[in-house]
Image 1 (tube, rainbow, N blue to C red):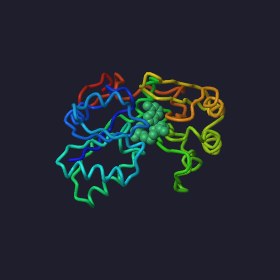
Image 2: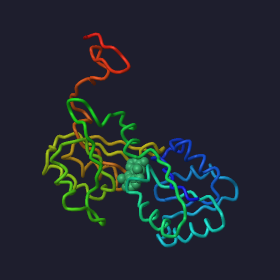
Image 3: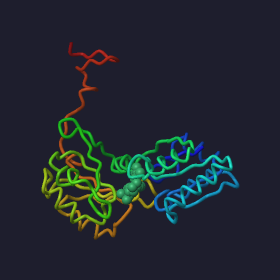
Image 4: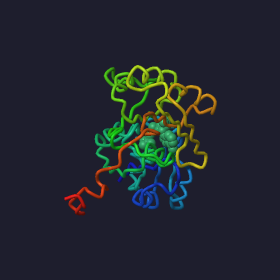
Length: 252
Ligand code: SAH
Protein backbone atom coordinates (compact mmCIF):
# COMPACT_ATOMS: atom_id res chain seq x y z
CA UNK A 1 0.00 0.00 0.00
CA UNK A 2 1.15 3.52 -0.78
CA UNK A 3 0.31 6.44 1.51
CA UNK A 4 0.64 10.05 0.40
CA UNK A 5 1.23 11.79 3.71
CA UNK A 6 1.19 15.49 4.54
CA UNK A 7 4.30 16.22 6.59
CA UNK A 8 3.01 19.53 7.94
CA UNK A 9 4.72 22.89 7.49
CA UNK A 10 8.03 22.10 9.15
CA UNK A 11 8.12 21.43 12.90
CA UNK A 12 8.40 17.65 13.31
CA UNK A 13 5.56 17.52 15.84
CA UNK A 14 3.10 19.15 13.44
CA UNK A 15 2.56 15.96 11.46
CA UNK A 16 -0.77 14.28 12.26
CA UNK A 17 -0.91 11.26 14.60
CA UNK A 18 -2.00 9.19 11.60
CA UNK A 19 0.88 10.45 9.48
CA UNK A 20 3.35 9.63 12.25
CA UNK A 21 1.92 6.11 12.66
CA UNK A 22 2.27 5.54 8.91
CA UNK A 23 5.91 6.69 9.01
CA UNK A 24 6.56 4.35 11.96
CA UNK A 25 5.34 1.28 10.10
CA UNK A 26 6.68 2.22 6.63
CA UNK A 27 9.16 -0.08 4.89
CA UNK A 28 9.96 2.65 2.36
CA UNK A 29 9.74 6.45 2.56
CA UNK A 30 10.16 8.79 -0.39
CA UNK A 31 10.27 12.34 0.96
CA UNK A 32 10.27 15.70 -0.78
CA UNK A 33 13.72 16.66 0.47
CA UNK A 34 13.66 20.29 -0.56
CA UNK A 35 10.94 21.15 1.97
CA UNK A 36 10.22 18.26 4.32
CA UNK A 37 11.99 18.47 7.68
CA UNK A 38 14.44 15.51 7.78
CA UNK A 39 13.77 15.24 11.53
CA UNK A 40 10.53 13.47 10.55
CA UNK A 41 12.60 10.57 9.23
CA UNK A 42 13.55 9.77 12.83
CA UNK A 43 10.04 8.33 13.22
CA UNK A 44 10.88 5.54 10.76
CA UNK A 45 11.92 2.07 11.89
CA UNK A 46 15.37 0.52 11.45
CA UNK A 47 15.87 -0.83 7.94
CA UNK A 48 13.32 1.51 6.35
CA UNK A 49 14.41 2.35 2.79
CA UNK A 50 14.60 6.14 2.47
CA UNK A 51 14.72 8.15 -0.77
CA UNK A 52 14.91 11.91 -1.32
CA UNK A 53 12.68 12.78 -4.27
CA UNK A 54 14.41 16.16 -4.75
CA UNK A 55 16.99 14.24 -6.77
CA UNK A 56 14.51 12.02 -8.64
CA UNK A 57 12.30 12.36 -11.71
CA UNK A 58 8.63 11.34 -11.77
CA UNK A 59 9.40 8.05 -13.61
CA UNK A 60 12.10 7.25 -11.04
CA UNK A 61 9.71 7.91 -8.16
CA UNK A 62 7.07 5.71 -9.77
CA UNK A 63 9.48 2.88 -10.52
CA UNK A 64 10.79 3.00 -6.94
CA UNK A 65 7.24 2.82 -5.59
CA UNK A 66 6.39 -0.01 -7.96
CA UNK A 67 9.46 -1.97 -6.87
CA UNK A 68 8.61 -1.54 -3.19
CA UNK A 69 4.98 -2.40 -3.73
CA UNK A 70 5.95 -5.53 -5.64
CA UNK A 71 8.03 -6.58 -2.62
CA UNK A 72 4.97 -6.14 -0.39
CA UNK A 73 6.21 -2.99 1.31
CA UNK A 74 4.19 -0.26 2.97
CA UNK A 75 5.35 2.94 1.31
CA UNK A 76 5.02 6.54 2.49
CA UNK A 77 5.30 9.33 -0.06
CA UNK A 78 5.94 12.28 2.23
CA UNK A 79 4.97 15.72 0.94
CA UNK A 80 5.31 19.08 2.64
CA UNK A 81 2.31 20.80 4.25
CA UNK A 82 -0.88 19.27 2.95
CA UNK A 83 -0.36 17.33 -0.28
CA UNK A 84 -3.48 18.81 -1.90
CA UNK A 85 -1.78 22.17 -2.52
CA UNK A 86 1.00 22.42 -5.11
CA UNK A 87 1.99 18.88 -4.19
CA UNK A 88 2.14 17.30 -7.66
CA UNK A 89 0.40 14.25 -6.24
CA UNK A 90 -2.36 13.96 -8.85
CA UNK A 91 0.08 12.80 -11.51
CA UNK A 92 1.49 10.22 -9.10
CA UNK A 93 -1.94 8.96 -8.05
CA UNK A 94 -3.10 8.67 -11.65
CA UNK A 95 0.04 6.73 -12.58
CA UNK A 96 -0.42 4.39 -9.60
CA UNK A 97 -4.02 3.80 -10.61
CA UNK A 98 -2.84 2.86 -14.07
CA UNK A 99 -0.35 0.44 -12.58
CA UNK A 100 -3.07 -0.92 -10.26
CA UNK A 101 -1.11 0.01 -7.14
CA UNK A 102 -3.45 0.91 -4.24
CA UNK A 103 -2.97 4.21 -2.41
CA UNK A 104 -4.47 6.42 0.30
CA UNK A 105 -3.97 10.06 1.23
CA UNK A 106 -3.35 11.35 4.77
CA UNK A 107 -3.80 15.12 5.12
CA UNK A 108 -1.38 17.49 6.82
CA UNK A 109 -1.18 21.02 8.17
CA UNK A 110 -0.57 23.32 5.22
CA UNK A 111 2.04 26.06 5.48
CA UNK A 112 -0.66 28.69 5.00
CA UNK A 113 -2.06 27.55 8.35
CA UNK A 114 1.43 27.46 9.86
CA UNK A 115 2.02 31.01 8.63
CA UNK A 116 -1.23 32.30 10.20
CA UNK A 117 -0.22 30.65 13.47
CA UNK A 118 3.24 32.24 13.29
CA UNK A 119 1.63 35.64 12.75
CA UNK A 120 -1.04 34.93 15.39
CA UNK A 121 -3.65 36.10 12.93
CA UNK A 122 -7.00 34.99 11.47
CA UNK A 123 -7.69 35.17 7.73
CA UNK A 124 -11.46 35.50 8.03
CA UNK A 125 -12.54 38.51 10.07
CA UNK A 126 -16.19 39.60 10.27
CA UNK A 127 -16.82 42.94 8.63
CA UNK A 128 -13.46 42.79 6.85
CA UNK A 129 -13.01 39.63 4.84
CA UNK A 130 -14.61 36.22 4.73
CA UNK A 131 -12.59 34.65 1.93
CA UNK A 132 -9.03 33.47 1.44
CA UNK A 133 -7.48 33.30 -2.00
CA UNK A 134 -4.67 30.78 -2.28
CA UNK A 135 -2.72 31.42 -5.45
CA UNK A 136 0.68 31.86 -7.02
CA UNK A 137 2.28 34.30 -9.42
CA UNK A 138 3.04 32.96 -12.87
CA UNK A 139 6.62 31.83 -13.12
CA UNK A 140 7.95 28.79 -14.90
CA UNK A 141 4.61 27.09 -14.24
CA UNK A 142 1.89 28.70 -16.31
CA UNK A 143 -1.22 30.07 -14.62
CA UNK A 144 -4.55 30.14 -16.52
CA UNK A 145 -5.35 33.67 -17.76
CA UNK A 146 -8.50 33.99 -15.71
CA UNK A 147 -6.47 33.18 -12.56
CA UNK A 148 -3.79 35.80 -13.01
CA UNK A 149 -3.15 37.70 -9.78
CA UNK A 150 -4.42 40.89 -11.42
CA UNK A 151 -7.72 39.08 -12.12
CA UNK A 152 -7.96 37.65 -8.60
CA UNK A 153 -6.95 40.95 -7.01
CA UNK A 154 -10.31 42.59 -7.64
CA UNK A 155 -11.78 40.86 -4.59
CA UNK A 156 -9.46 42.38 -2.00
CA UNK A 157 -9.81 39.15 0.01
CA UNK A 158 -7.14 37.71 2.27
CA UNK A 159 -4.46 36.61 -0.19
CA UNK A 160 -1.86 33.89 0.40
CA UNK A 161 0.75 33.39 -2.28
CA UNK A 162 2.78 30.21 -2.58
CA UNK A 163 5.86 29.77 -4.77
CA UNK A 164 6.13 33.46 -5.57
CA UNK A 165 9.16 34.76 -3.66
CA UNK A 166 11.21 35.19 -6.82
CA UNK A 167 8.45 37.30 -8.37
CA UNK A 168 7.77 40.00 -5.80
CA UNK A 169 7.86 42.94 -8.27
CA UNK A 170 5.29 41.19 -10.42
CA UNK A 171 3.14 40.33 -7.37
CA UNK A 172 3.18 43.95 -6.26
CA UNK A 173 2.16 45.28 -9.69
CA UNK A 174 -0.57 42.71 -10.24
CA UNK A 175 -2.15 43.20 -6.82
CA UNK A 176 -2.02 47.00 -7.11
CA UNK A 177 -3.94 46.62 -10.37
CA UNK A 178 -6.82 45.29 -8.26
CA UNK A 179 -8.33 46.21 -4.90
CA UNK A 180 -5.08 46.31 -2.92
CA UNK A 181 -3.27 49.54 -2.07
CA UNK A 182 0.37 50.51 -1.63
CA UNK A 183 -0.38 50.62 2.11
CA UNK A 184 -2.29 47.32 2.30
CA UNK A 185 -0.63 45.29 5.07
CA UNK A 186 1.65 42.56 3.82
CA UNK A 187 3.77 39.89 5.51
CA UNK A 188 6.41 37.43 4.40
CA UNK A 189 6.63 34.28 6.49
CA UNK A 190 9.81 32.31 5.84
CA UNK A 191 9.92 28.67 6.98
CA UNK A 192 6.85 28.93 9.18
CA UNK A 193 7.12 26.63 12.25
CA UNK A 194 10.78 25.72 11.54
CA UNK A 195 13.51 26.83 13.98
CA UNK A 196 14.66 29.29 11.27
CA UNK A 197 11.19 30.86 10.97
CA UNK A 198 11.30 34.54 10.07
CA UNK A 199 8.47 37.04 9.86
CA UNK A 200 8.75 40.30 7.94
CA UNK A 201 5.86 42.73 8.15
CA UNK A 202 5.28 45.76 5.95
CA UNK A 203 3.04 47.02 3.20
CA UNK A 204 2.38 45.79 -0.31
CA UNK A 205 4.18 48.80 -1.77
CA UNK A 206 7.41 47.65 -0.11
CA UNK A 207 7.08 43.92 -0.78
CA UNK A 208 10.13 43.66 -3.11
CA UNK A 209 12.33 45.58 -0.65
CA UNK A 210 11.07 43.48 2.28
CA UNK A 211 12.16 40.34 0.45
CA UNK A 212 15.48 41.79 -0.71
CA UNK A 213 16.52 43.39 2.57
CA UNK A 214 15.91 40.14 4.41
CA UNK A 215 17.45 37.90 1.76
CA UNK A 216 14.28 35.79 1.41
CA UNK A 217 13.91 34.27 -2.04
CA UNK A 218 12.32 30.89 -1.32
CA UNK A 219 10.42 28.71 1.17
CA UNK A 220 8.16 31.56 2.19
CA UNK A 221 4.60 32.70 1.81
CA UNK A 222 3.42 36.18 0.96
CA UNK A 223 0.29 37.25 2.82
CA UNK A 224 -1.56 40.37 1.77
CA UNK A 225 -4.73 41.97 3.05
CA UNK A 226 -6.37 44.13 5.66
CA UNK A 227 -6.88 41.05 7.84
CA UNK A 228 -3.28 41.58 8.94
CA UNK A 229 -4.10 44.86 10.69
CA UNK A 230 -7.55 46.18 9.84
CA UNK A 231 -10.53 46.96 12.06
CA UNK A 232 -12.99 44.08 12.28
CA UNK A 233 -16.32 43.33 13.91
CA UNK A 234 -16.76 40.82 16.74
CA UNK A 235 -18.17 37.47 15.65
CA UNK A 236 -21.93 36.96 15.94
CA UNK A 237 -21.42 33.37 17.08
CA UNK A 238 -20.06 34.38 20.49
CA UNK A 239 -22.15 37.53 20.96
CA UNK A 240 -24.12 37.43 24.25
CA UNK A 241 -27.43 38.23 22.47
CA UNK A 242 -26.99 35.59 19.76
CA UNK A 243 -28.77 32.22 20.12
CA UNK A 244 -27.36 29.07 18.57
CA UNK A 245 -28.35 25.40 18.64
CA UNK A 246 -26.02 25.07 21.66
CA UNK A 247 -26.65 28.26 23.63
CA UNK A 248 -29.65 30.51 24.28
CA UNK A 249 -28.71 34.19 23.91
CA UNK A 250 -29.72 36.92 26.34
CA UNK A 251 -31.39 38.99 23.65
CA UNK A 252 -34.61 37.02 22.97
N1 SAH B 1 1.80 21.47 -0.02
C1 SAH B 1 2.54 22.55 0.58
C2 SAH B 1 3.00 23.56 -0.44
C3 SAH B 1 4.03 23.03 -1.41
S1 SAH B 1 4.58 24.20 -2.57
C4 SAH B 1 1.71 23.18 1.71
O1 SAH B 1 0.56 22.79 1.92
O2 SAH B 1 2.22 24.04 2.40
C5 SAH B 1 6.02 24.84 -1.82
C6 SAH B 1 5.82 26.26 -1.38
O3 SAH B 1 5.05 26.26 -0.18
C7 SAH B 1 7.06 27.03 -1.02
O4 SAH B 1 7.67 27.60 -2.15
C8 SAH B 1 6.53 28.09 -0.10
O5 SAH B 1 5.87 29.11 -0.84
C9 SAH B 1 5.47 27.32 0.64
N2 SAH B 1 5.93 26.74 1.92
C10 SAH B 1 6.07 25.43 2.22
N3 SAH B 1 6.44 25.27 3.50
C11 SAH B 1 6.53 26.52 4.03
C12 SAH B 1 6.81 27.03 5.33
N4 SAH B 1 7.09 26.22 6.36
N5 SAH B 1 6.78 28.38 5.50
C13 SAH B 1 6.48 29.21 4.49
N6 SAH B 1 6.19 28.78 3.24
C14 SAH B 1 6.20 27.45 3.02
